[in-house]
Length: 421
Ligand code: URA
Image 1 (cartoon, rainbow, N blue to C red):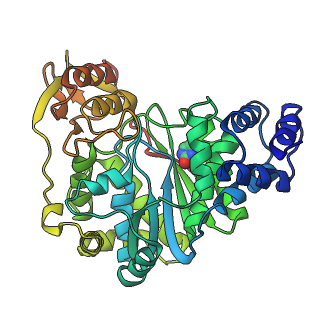
Image 2 (spheres, rainbow, N blue to C red):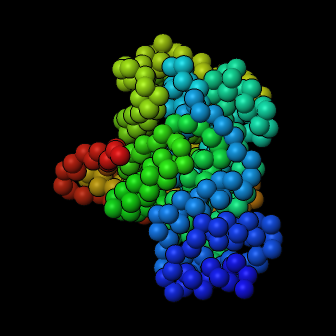
Image 3 (cartoon, rainbow, N blue to C red):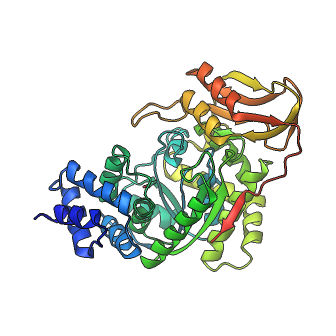
């Protein structure tokens, strides 16, 4: 019997897959010897029966080893499980690098409601995301910070994730954990923080699921040699005011220049930066973060990265955004009970700021600006959301209107960082 049939038979009966069998199947699928239909059957058996921790470690290691593995033991990295308006990489990592801690970060593109850092970077004219390993390494050494597209790493994960996406097998904790950690292991940074989002605009909708994933990510990372931590942050409301590529870069620039930004964005970004400094053993990390923003070195570091990767530093400070297409207003006076992240994400997607399907062309200037936050009091007719763009405006208005819940009760402020692990 072939390895993959052995694995399907064992897993469907609840058996444990030996490390060597996992490696043989993953290698066979990546090389094309195992066909999609057999791999899909195995993935569904795993989705239904599960993998224990040892099997999950073996799968993670095999996928990490399926392509080149970089090594940046002194560097830090961060990973977000994906959210709406999530610009934490652009805000927090320049701060960390400005504090003298090198950053090696590979990112992806957005799909569906989740934005991707690579798309945000491409909103900066000239910014190049395709770095060879040599270019990436040189920039980490010379600038202390490089941000590239995670193209060639962990090819087995890439192939398996694409198959999961079309076979109803994405929503499996061990498959999600091994997929994420395999890419981090292949990137090779020695210190890592996971920002696991919980809420309507996140992959993990409940705090319990987010906690389970966060625990698994940290445990798997530690098992594979990464010094890791996780925080769980709120994603019932989009982070900050801006959702959309150029809009988010503008808001990140404002944060790094020490200008006033929404409190949730400020808190989460300063927290992530401080956690990363602490992971590297830096004393008084919070004060170091505040100082790097106040003295301009954090913004200067972003400029250095943009310059090093061919981007237009002059344009960075004032990226063009699309015309205002519509403003959604409050239908009555009241208190904002919710501005649902999922509805805002769908509005942004309809305007062309995100991709409905792989390969869709983005409108970098399109997106949504949230003018109010949960807990704010509004008058009837007061603008609550501003929409930028020219595509799908009517649909976007519908989503944004549906995202708003008004109440007559006071709304207690919610924490933005929900838990730390
Ligand atoms: N993100 C990943 O990289 N992998 C998954 O399986 C899910 C989300």
